[in-house]
Image 1 (cartoon, rainbow, N blue to C red):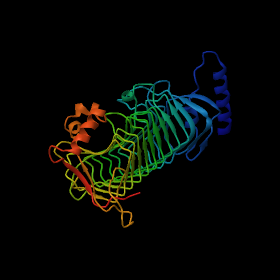
Image 2 (cartoon, rainbow, N blue to C red; image 1 turned 30 degrees about the horizontal axis):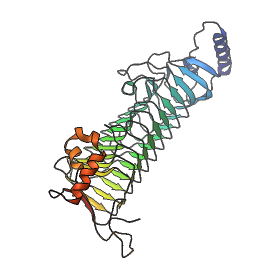
Image 3 (cartoon, helix red, strand yellow; image 1 turned 30 degrees about the vertical axis):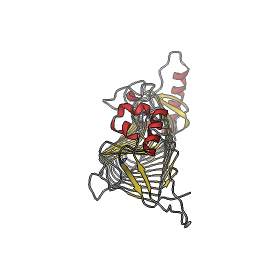
Image 4 (spheres, rainbow, N blue to C red; image 1 turned 45 degrees about the horizontal axis):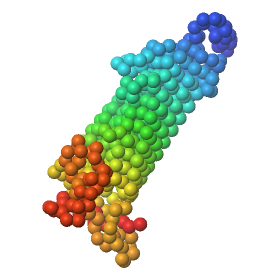
Length: 404
């Protein structure tokens, strides 16, 4: 009986598609007759949304099904547990930020959303109070708006235990987690967007093996403790107001084995919220950045070991009246180190020290940052090093610098 219904529905869809000035057939009628646990493979073609799935089932598009939201609301809503949605194209959502119009809304647990294409949708995938879902290998883009008017490519709101893996995002606003702990974001690729990943009140997440390139900013953590940021590629983030990594009022953050290349600022960090909970930066590579690390409100306590600083315009910058001396520096490689390793143990015989000369000008007065790296400042820097008029401030001392 049900196979007969699907056959008739397929014939109806074909007739509607062939009719001049036709409307798209609704996909909801296929969903409504699919039993719990069933697998639905509609006839290839385009269907009208919005669509709501209220029972556990598998919707297989096989790359031949398009759901068009008609410019109203969210294209596909999942308000059930145990749903799998695979191989669909979802397009043309509404344009309301207030109602979070998205390609897919998930309000359930243990669902799988994979291998879908979402385009011309304000928000991409929205998880709302959803747990233990898997979002894998989806391709997501927003509407052709200015970056600040786009929606989040992937948005988690009060959602935990989810796996966000292998998704490709282009021209969205960001990946945004708010009040969402203990998620895993692995192997995602975000480019030509606003913020790569933004976490607010989102502790205990794992951000690993992601690529964030040509965005305004890379990864931002605000009031989000105990996160791990590992083996990410943060490249070509050149906005004057952005950075590859920005950590604000967040403690217990492990940042290791990341590649930070050609950014305005590599890491922007303030002092730890609690003395016992600090940042740990291990084995990261900072290359061709304007400023590799920028500290503000610095009180020390961070552990910074085994990192590589190569060809940066400035390795360390601080705000006025602060320094980075009270952090735990050790075994970092500095291409500007001028000492020797006469005993051949791989550690320099003398500490690596960074003093401020002309760089103090643009750190104290941000408006002069425009002249950073200019020949005149380089001349002033050379003269101050040659014959300083006063004792230059010591910003940091690495007692055990690694040599090549």
